[in-house]
Image 1 (cartoon, rainbow, N blue to C red):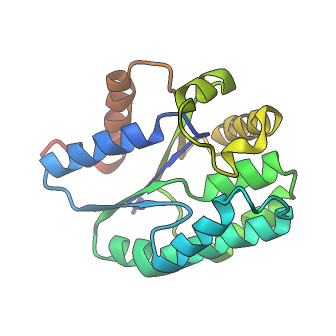
Image 2: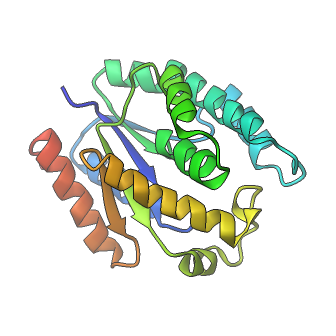
Length: 209
C-alpha cells in the first residue's frame, strides 16, 4: 500500500505554501481526512528546535549540529503526529521532509549523502512519502518572491548556497523519479495544482468523490 504521506519540497519562494493551501481546500471539499505539518516544527518540541535553527543570531552551526537538530525535530514529528495520523488512515501533507536534509545539508553544506540518508532513515522509521512534489524556481525568482519578507538564517545563506540546494533538489528528482514529481513553479498556479491533483488521483485512485 502506498503511503499517504505527501511532501512538498523546494527552496523558499518556490510556491510550496500556495499549493499546500490549494490542496487543503481540495481535500476538504471531498471530505478526505488529512493533517498538515511543517518542518522543522509541528510539535512543541520541534517548534523549539525550529526557533534555534532559523535564528539569524546562531551563525556558527557546524553542518553536523544543524543536521542533528533538523533530524531531531523530524523524529519527534513522525512519532507524535505523522505516524499516528497515517495509522488512522489520514493523509499527511508535509511542508518539507526528508529531501530537504539531502538538498540543504547534503548538496548545500557538502555533508556525506549516504550518512544523511542513514540518519534520515533512523528519524523516520519507515515513514517514507508516497509522493513528493518538488516546486522548482530559479534563484532570481526566489529572491523576488521573498522581497519584503525578512529572511531567516537558512534563507540568508547566500545565492551560492541556494544554487547548490536547488541543483541538489533537481538531482534528487532524477534519483527518486518514482516518487518525486518535478514541477516548474513559474507556471500558472492553477496549472501546477492540476498536475498535482492528477498525479494524486493516478496514485491513490479517484479522489474526486
